[in-house]
Length: 230
Image (cartoon, rainbow, N blue to C red):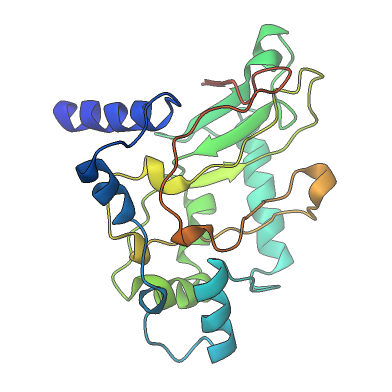
């Protein structure tokens, strides 16, 4: 297990090093195997229309509106606040805060927490992953054998004035040491109204057909997304 973890860290470190370029044929071949054929992204199903299938194949994402009822979204928000305030302790969960908030000794709460990771052991938050209406669409891309590999609740509190809340565009496939890529899908649901000014999800359509690129932080005024685990 330790050897496997070390190999994964080595792979991630390589992706995050901009000087490292894929220069030989074997590395290029390994990278390009992550690019799926257009006709292999959707499992035959009776849920999606042909228009939806074509849109997903072309763009790499699909929007299903009003899938999760408001009462459930409020339930997840309440649980998030309970965890932020320390009212609920969840084994195995990672609570991540912006380092600026930590250094300033600001009180804990939802305005200081950026992310909850690995909430599989929390029955309230993980119930989202078990919703029939979510699984109905997930199986259109994964098939019936579903495994939850990574869970996150991302919060976007106001920037503390250091621009450390910025999060650069990235390719998630870099951080997943399993394949095939065409049977992996992320289900993302906004818990509140989101738009460009308050930190919505951003997708570049069609990039699911491009090779994996070296990852590094952009040359912003302040290095961003420095987080501390708790």
